[in-house]
Length: 66
Image (cartoon, rainbow, N blue to C red; front, side, top):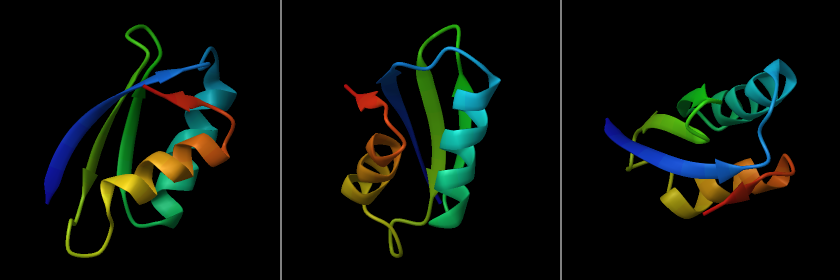
């Protein structure tokens, strides 16, 4: 498993947390949103998912990945 932290803009509430963590779970990545730091810690299998796919998944939920 590989671990990364992405900076994400636009998150402000529990709905944001649920939206991002749920979407990541659907692509078999495990995400933990930190609203205070505007970041998402993600664990994923780099043999199954690319970092580009992870970023796209977050952006599809309406957030900006920096």
